[in-house]
Amino acid sequence: MTVTSDLARTLAEEAEAEGITTFVAAAVVTDADRILLVRRKPDDFMGGLWEIPSGHVDAGESILEAACRETLEETGLTVASVDRYLGHFDYENSRGTTTRQFNFAVTVSETGPVVLTEHDLHQWAAPGDLPGVTDGVREVLACA
Image (cartoon, rainbow, N blue to C red; front, side):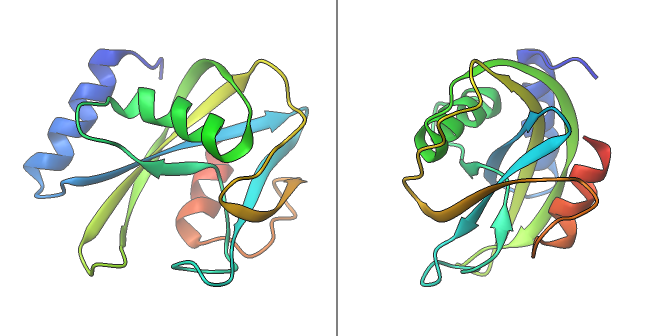
């Protein structure tokens, strides 16, 4: 599915209609057949879990803008294009409410160096050899 600003707006409207108002945008960054994963610091919410670069959608920001911004902030990699929508999943956040994570396949200008600011480790993992990720992330990566 081609990603457009209209699609992103529709995704947000559908989530809001379901009563979900906290959004996270995530980017699946690949290099050949490997996927970039980052590990949450042990003292963070869900500490020690591996995830794809992601973060909250700020007020006045589109889901697509957030996916690009969070990728740059968390990894130092610049998103050149948002290529496909890979679906979403919901989870209970640290405040006990529901967050919807929207996931996109992206292309980055360069795949390195990866410079971490919010995580303690990164790795390029093969889809069939994923470390400790949530079921939601595992399902998204199966579509990537």
